[in-house]
Image (cartoon, rainbow, N blue to C red; front, side):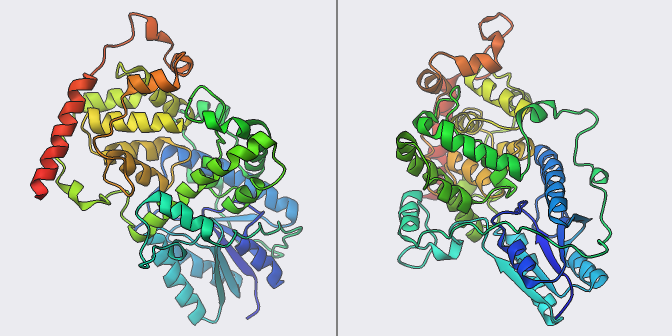
Length: 455
């Protein structure tokens, strides 16, 4: 069937290593590159505020890159089941290409569209682009998804080497008359009243070009110190996570960058970094089998966990970094200011909310979803459930990350804490809102009550 090719981009906002885009270009017909803001299809989770800010700027960068290649970005808004066929009818498209998604609602939409468009005679293709290993390809000997990360990691290493990245098209020929497109500013993705994104603008540069600069800087300047990654004051992590979340860079590009042109010290650290990349894949495998991961306990026995009555004042103190616990407050202020938090500190702040304040993990997960520029449909709930003890390969509930001991171990000179809590030594710093030892004991008692209720 002749007619233009539609490339429907979702969480893959890049030109390089984009198999759907590559296939559309190779088809030889004009290419329409579409981004559809779908916040209404069943099973979809609307983006949080920080992610909406990132999306706006990432789409701007993508449109600029497309125009340099001879095309442009078409923006539409609405449910995919309606808007994709509508664009096909408007343009006389003969083919639709996309890269696969793994959440339950997204898969249902994609499956339905693939069937209906093929019934109309269109060529429809989906591609592997955003995971190194498809969830259904890494399974136990019994053909079941892994529930523990370490054997999952070993199974991935036994798989064939991930493919090499697909080349970026030299040219992308758009149609002679571009389809009607929404105005990006009209989507209202940016905060205005108030404009709280100043810290995000200072800290981040969304877009594919920035993603590759970040990767290259990490490989050449940072990776050799990756063994210090648990120290939040050290520049020892990649800061690639938001670029991953929006697909501005692919795991295939990262995987193969770790295989070449590294210093001897960096080579020694590369496998540890790739292990963390594959942790993301593990969470997506869990999401694939458990599409309600953000709202439902992975381990059903936690449905009986006796969460305490929410003290809104305590939760608000946690959100604003006013708990009187320095490492917790530093992390929550970093999150509020920059849309990001160091991973070790994420564990500490999450553990404090769930186990010291005895607040349901879903309350914290939703706050992180709204505040993180790297909020991810698999990693965010998967990691919160890991910390809470209710998830796959979860930290045992009795493992409570004591913020004071964690600070002694990973921020011994208090450099990170003083960066975000400069008043720590002043009389203005609040007293702790909870006693760490007593609240830990309370949490363990609640855990034992849950266990007894299941006997």
